Length: 272
Ligand SMILES: [Zn+2]
Image (cartoon, rainbow, N blue to C red; front, side, top):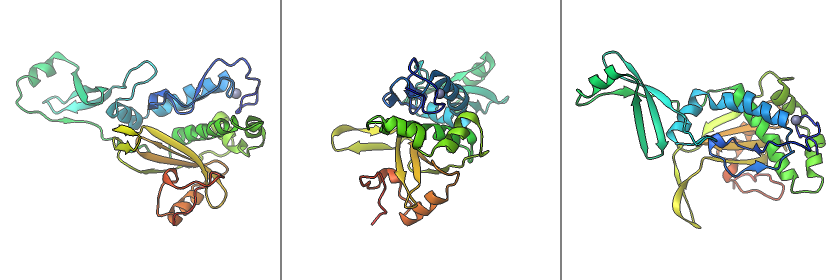
């Protein structure tokens, strides 16, 4: 077995690849050991996923949605109490329904207990930053891994993904920072982050933390479309451009391919 990114032997790999990081609420989508070698796995965890998860938007969104990391901790966000001095506070969200704040010093506490009402400022951070390379590299890592997951279901499929998938420019960008300086992705809000969904076969409503799908635009270009906390990201696997996707959206009433009708080739049919 060889690693789909660096093509080195990965027979003895011990790391398990989460397609979407656990810190974004993914407990189920994993790949068998060896699809990625431990060096690549470690590189993605420390150089791509961690810096992305530490962006102010992801800290705030994970806090608001009370998403635990591997160590079962929800990240702490911060705000300001409009006391005479302006006191920094920590915002906690250990469970989704019960937010709380930590006061960081005794003086603030003494001031606060004398107030009938008070105001505080909390960061909005409602959208990820535009044109962020940590996000585009993250999408560029998820794309080959998602292809590999499909490849595993077909005989010789993984070999095909490793050697013949036409992904080298994207792999060079993501794994080695070579080639194109920035591989742009498309980003928009599809629904509010704490939207509740219902489904026929599930009795309660539920929240969707992430969903993803590979699809082909009408120009036959493969794209990864991924929704995290209601924000849709889309990356062209073959070329550093968002033009194909923007054109596809225009032809399809701006609907998301995640909710389109897919034919047997995985191609989303244009809306009727
Ligand atoms: Zn590797």
